[in-house]
Image 1 (tube, rainbow, N blue to C red):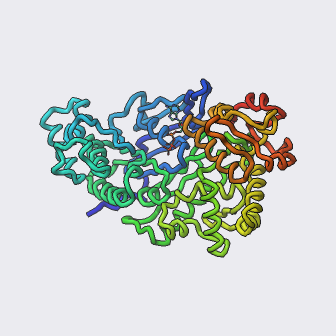
Image 2: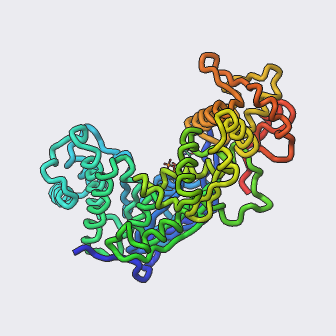
Image 3: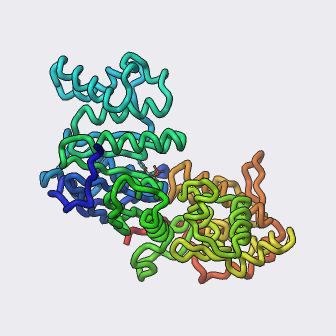
Length: 470
Ligand SMILES: Nc1ncnc2c1ncn2[C@@H]1O[C@H](COP(=O)(O)OP(=O)(O)OP(=O)(O)O)[C@@H](O)[C@H]1O
């Protein structure tokens, strides 16, 4: 029978990180602070989920916890002893499976034991038992290329189990799988883990899925902010197996949803940077997606419970997050906990004719979306109303990596084009101001704050720096 674990009295501390900060070199030769002042403990026998949005530093924190990455400052301890290198009692499962393509399933599973110099016969016996436990019998001689994603991740689990770790670290292990395969493997993992005899084995799983966190964890830590810190902790006292439709499950999802969408604790404060493109990135939502969300909320009478809406649309709730964030950044929706309400601006935008709705979107984007505002302002301050897109890419790379900077620019161009604020010519790689935007100049007086692109000329914009760590 499956062991029903935790929500039991906490065991002894297995692993802890104290005051961790992580600073990476960024593409432009500067630095990018990903984590700051992170503290967490993992106790024997508990399952902890690290929940956060993309880029919040979850994987970085997990690698630090595993001893695979030395933090810029702070300390990692394992059973009270500072960790200086990869911790042998810790095993890791990766989103990308990370299998050796030239080795068979059996050889992949044996690999860690080989490195630990476990004798051949014991190695083989343990690997076969782990393969058996995770339902891979018959695939021992297969190569990774012959396996489906779900089977490949089973190898990832077997490779971790075979080490008999005290702490299993998992970095979004189900997110590369289709929904059904992921769901199935998640339940099997819990069954296999639950059958194991040792009561002190722990799991720390990184996820951006609220439901996955509630499904698996005894405790959910919400990582967020820039740089990332632990912003909230929610114990999940729901007996296993957990029913997604139960009121307690739904209440936990709502709570986490509110924590993820809410303002970081303590904000705004004296050290809170002014809203700018680097501190307030555009959420991943197109103008078309925003129109769809507003349409749906209007159809629900102007108010909807977001987890219910996700359910209704058969979406994982976190798929809605960027759309909801974008709608609230633009003032089209207001979010209170898990409830969202259409605002007057949202109503006006929805019911207006095409030209009018574009004009009201333009107004909202210029006044409320920092990157759109920065682009309009920089274009206004150039003689020709045209600038190379690289100018904006360079600015964005002060706070984002290459791919995220490009995504931000693409989103801003989509919003700018929809509002007819500016256009982009892919042949010349130039961004051009439209006439509509010129009329919005009065909205761009100093004082409303952007951290790049503010000032009277484009030269000044390049001198702006990413926000300093408080
Ligand atoms: N070795 C590195 N060098 C430079 N930057 C890095 C490095 N590793 C991570 N980063 C950057 O740190 C930030 C946080 O990355 P991380 O992978 O920890 O986030 P995450 O929350 O796990 O995101 P996701 O859910 O998208 O995987 C990102 O901007 C990433 O590009």
